[in-house]
Image (cartoon, rainbow, N blue to C red):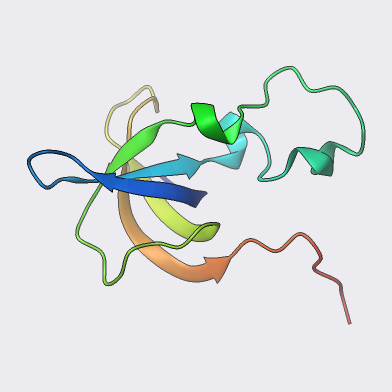
Length: 97
């Protein structure tokens, strides 16, 4: 199963593995807590608490809020691998023409 999320940070491990901190909206809540319009949120994960996921080699390092594609590495959908960049970015103020 492929899911999409927003890259927040990245780091390299000691062996050179790229790890990317990703917000997956279905799991961690929307990119901005303000999208709840003042309602309290039980299952919202703060950016500082988001997990890092291992990544394949990418054409460039992701910038904050760049959309990444991930694939589940087990049947429980609890562990993911970043497989690519989509070219999209998060924007809070999208309006229809």
